Length: 331
Ligand code: AVJ
Image 1: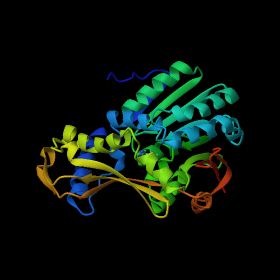
Image 2 (image 1 turned 135 degrees about the vertical axis):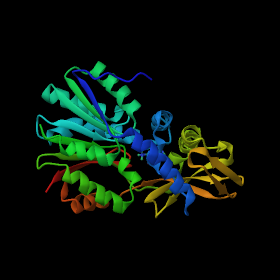
Image 3 (image 1 turned 45 degrees about the horizontal axis):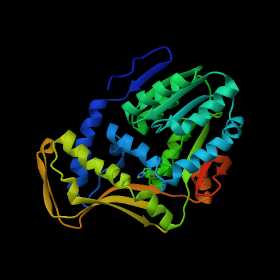
Image 4 (image 1 turned 180 degrees about the vertical axis):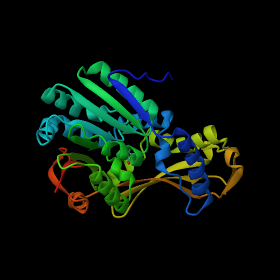
């Protein structure tokens, strides 16, 4: 795909791509070579994986995107009324930026012009999203940061021309354990000034049946998304995984507090990975953990904020009370 050009309204910063490719090899070597086996979920999002994730967001079972969209549609103006104006909109894990359009529109209504700084691991998603947004909104200027969260936060800390509204939506926080989330929200707090705000979209604890169907959909899109990790090992590292030997598994654990995703081996196999010059043996029933999706209660959201010296300024739920968007401000 042709790379988007830098222009007066669009600039991008890319954080060490080569190191990232190496780190995929390293992560596969470490993750498949030790027990319990695992692959880190941040590697889901190559171009194909990002597209599959967009398809997940449209699934009837995957209520998260719709619930959050409902909240942002109803309350975008109320959200930005509680932010200083003018404000820069930053976003962690922006993906296609579809979920952000309500905020962008509300901010453009309120302040006419807007600087938007999306951070995402997928350069192709950033380019596509930026082109679409710039075509739709005059008055928008975008600086995209292609990096993992850690590097992205470092850039955001330097983004001090105007106060910032940092959006971290889509329950992306769910990929962290509770402990990691506490730590990471502390890191966001460190990148915030006294006037900045954090807008957090969090999926709430709920009935296990609703969760299982959201993460094991009837059309098998989530299964393909999950197996895309193996396809990436094949494509990028010369792996020999037969995708038919693996099945997708989604399990609710921790009393509805977490969905655990992984791949179960259906047939004993030995898989060579050329780039690692190494083979991995799997028995039938072996499990590779690929993702956690942590769910929160409302009090857990408040204590998460509190532990990072933030307070919940206001929070909004969807009409089915499945999802929460919370606006956090420094103490
Ligand atoms: C992008 C982390 C929010 O946990 O719901 C969706 C990822 N994985 N279906 C989630 C995901 C399988 C998603 N997040």
